[in-house]
Image (tube, rainbow, N blue to C red; front, side, top):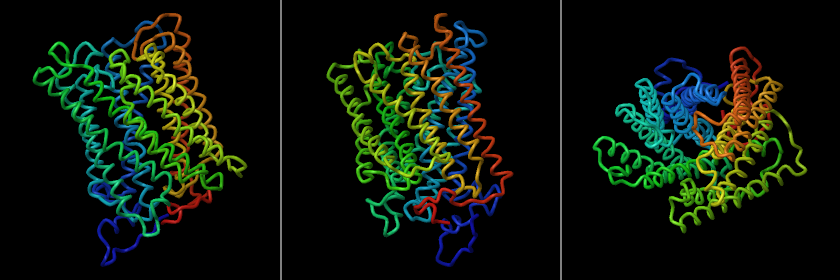
Length: 516
C-alpha cells in the first residue's frame, strides 16, 4: 500500500520514518518509532486492550445484577470490579481514544503535514500511557480499591494503602500522557500546516481535536492536583477532604468535576468531528454552515468548563452556584442545536449514499439525541435533586459513552481502507451497526426507568420488582457484546484473508485521501 523511499540528505529521521509504516515489522522499529501513524496503531492496540477489560468487567457486573440479591460476588468484590471498570473505560479507553488514535493518524495528513510537530514527545506519551496502565493493573492484582471511578473515598468501607496509591499514581501518569498528546496536537496545528491550509480551511475534525486538546490542557492539571491532595491526605493523615480530619469533601467534588465535566465534552467533540467528516463525504456536499461549526465547538467547550458543579448534589452547593451551573448546562443546548440543524440541512435533498459508515453515524446520532435530552433533564435543579447518583445518571452516561464508541466505529470503518488497503463485508458491517444500536437501547433505556424509581447507581442489591428491568438491561448488554464480536471478526478477516485492495472506495476528497 505504501511506497518506501530512501532517506534523502536533507530529510530528518522523523520524516524518513514516516515513509515505512508497514515495511519493517521488527519490534525495535515499532517500539522506538517516531511515525505518528505507527503510534496511532500502537495506541489502538493498547486502548482496545483496556476497553476489552472494561467490557469484561461490565459483563461480570451485569451477571451479578440478574438477581436482586448477591449471588457470586461479595460487596467488596462488586465495588472493586465496579471501580476498575469505570477507571479502565474512562481514563484508559474513552479519554485517549479520539486524540491518540484518530488524531495521531489523521491530523497531520489533514493539514498537509508529513509528521507531528513533536514526534519524540508523542512516543513518550504512549510509554507514559503504558506505565499508567501497568500501575492500574498491578493495583488490581494487589486487591484493588472500592472508590468508584471518581475516587470517592466514602463509597467503600476500606482502602489498602498500596493499591490506592498505585491507582492514584496511575491517574496522574495517564493525565501527563494526555497533556503531552494535547500539546503535540495543538503545536502541530499551529506550526505544521501547509502554506495553503488557513485556519478557515481546517477540516471540522481538526477543529474538534484542537478544541478538545485545549480543554485537556485546562482541566487535566486540576485532576492531577486533586489526586495529589487525596494521596497526601492518605499518606500523612492530614485533613484536606476527609471531614473526620477537618477537611471538606465538597472541595474534592469541585476539583474532580471541574475536570470530569469538561472531559465529557472533550471526549465527545472529536466524535462529532468524525460524524461531520463522514456526512460530508456521503452527502457529496460540504457541511451546511461549516464556518460556524468551530464556533459551536468553542461554545460547548466554554460551557463545559463553567458548568462543572452541575455534577455535584444541588443541596451541597450555594444557591447561586447551583442556579448558574443549571443555566450554563441548559445553555449547552444552543450550540448543540446549531450542529443538529447544520446536519439536517446537509441531509436535505442530498444524494446520500448509505454505505456502512453512515449506518454507524446514524446509530451514533440516535444515541447522542437521547444523551442530550437526558442531560437537559439532569440540568433542571428540581429533577437533579431527585435523580442525582441514580441509574438515571448511569443511563445518561452510558448513552454518551456508547455514542462516542459508535462514532469511533464509524470512523474506523470509514478510514479502514486508507489504513489497511483492504475492504470488509458491507452487509456484515451494516448488520453490526443495527445490532449494536438495538443492544444499546435495550441495555440503557430501561435504566432511565430504574433510576426514576430511585435505585442508586453502583448498587449491588435492589428491590425484587426491578428484576425484570435488570434482566432486560443485561440482555441488551449481551446483544452489544455479540455486535462487538461481529465487528472484530470481519475486520480481522479483512486484514488476514481479504486480498481485494481499495484505497478510497468512498471516493472521498481531502488531503488524507490524496496523501500516500
